Length: 124
Image (cartoon, rainbow, N blue to C red; front, side):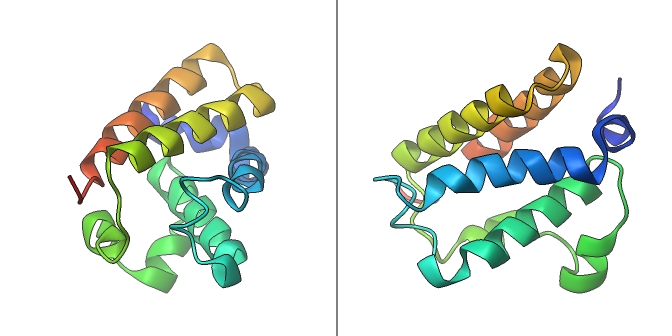
């Protein structure tokens, strides 16, 4: 399976379940809770869901509304250190545990999440 085939395998609902499972953990988290604006968790959830759908072969709704992802630029205002990166990956792995995707899909998503989370580190 290729990255762009993930959407056809799990659909919008699969990404919705994954992102919801992730964000249920964020607001009370002692590391990430301080980074995410409490008044915009729903917006952050919506943006991540739309981005992942686009990134993994779904409709380009994210691009239509937000333009090019520019992930490094969009994360620059937030202090993302190694601890935040590790916690983000940890919580996303817990979300993956909850949604029970196939091992093949999980491997693709985990690889992307780990490498992209590392690329977002902007504070040492």
